[in-house]
Amino acid sequence: MVFEPTQTIYDALQEREFKCVIRERDDCSYVETAVNFEALRVEMRFISYDDEHDVAVRVREFATFPEERTDAVLEAVNRINATYRMIKLTVDTARCIVGIHADLPLCEENLAETAVELFRFIPSIGNRVYPGLMRVAWGDGTLDEESFDTKSDEASDEESDEDSDANEDTE
Amino acid sequence: MIYQATQAIADRFEEENYKFRISEEENTSRVIAGVTCDNTTIDIHFISSDDDNDVSVRVFRLVRFPEDKLDTILRVVNALNRQFRFARFIVDEDDRSVDIHHDIQSCTQDVGEAAVEMFCRLPNIADDAFPQLMKAIWGN
Image 1 (cartoon, rainbow over the protein chains, first blue to last red):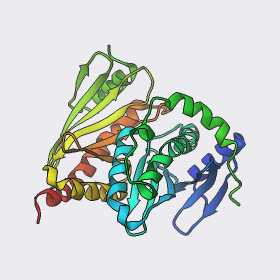
Image 2 (cartoon, chains in turn purple, brown):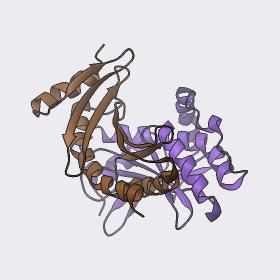
Image 3 (cartoon, rainbow over the protein chains, first blue to last red):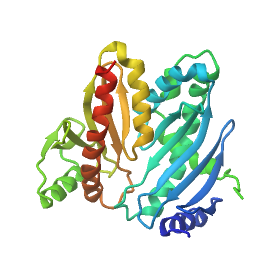
Image 4 (cartoon, chains in turn cyan, blue):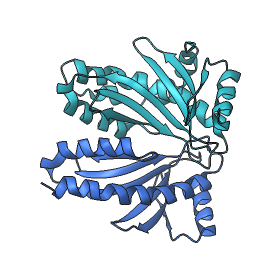
């Protein structure tokens, strides 16, 4: 079945002409959407396990890395998590994958707006940190402080409105 | 000055009979509420730096660790970040400590209610995470 938050978020994204689809599983329903940037495709899910508003927002495969770079990636991810608000990056060390997590609070009455805010925010941050993370994962392995610069937050948030127009149909 | 979110959280905490204090700094104001858990005691800071609703929720220095445990702690903190929703565990490499972060979004309708929810969630998370961190620091 499609839980109420899933329908609310789907309607909010559709209203703003962002392409998305609803998926159903035995234990959950979710809105799936994707945003493309130059070198990055961010696939997001807004997952509900019931009709409460504590929606789990997940980017399951934000980046991959070779196993021998695990320690360096963990250090970089911690640096990113310390720098940026609202989201956290997590590392699946068994599968060598970096994901992005965010969670909406149970008490959130303004579900549509908060979901849309995250829909814009996550790709914006993803696009910012991706090059630095890739250098750590696949390049010379060094942490580049400029990759984790937050000074242009506002400008990037404005850009994300345009960037989000490039989101692909996930069907 | 005391920002509106700080006041809204304080008012809501008053209603709930939570013990807290308000602190004012040059550019921020905050509500600080102490909680005694089974395994540890924490202070939760609800920090505002403007009149928006995007409050930074922080638990500083949940644990401290020796320098030679940094790699181990990074792995445990990542596991905690995967295990728990809402809490973002951060390793402060300079302070050699682990903090918990959460952020209330600016478009949140009721910042007081969101703060109450975090006041209920974070002590449970901290209490569950604390033994895992201590085992990593002091275990073999």
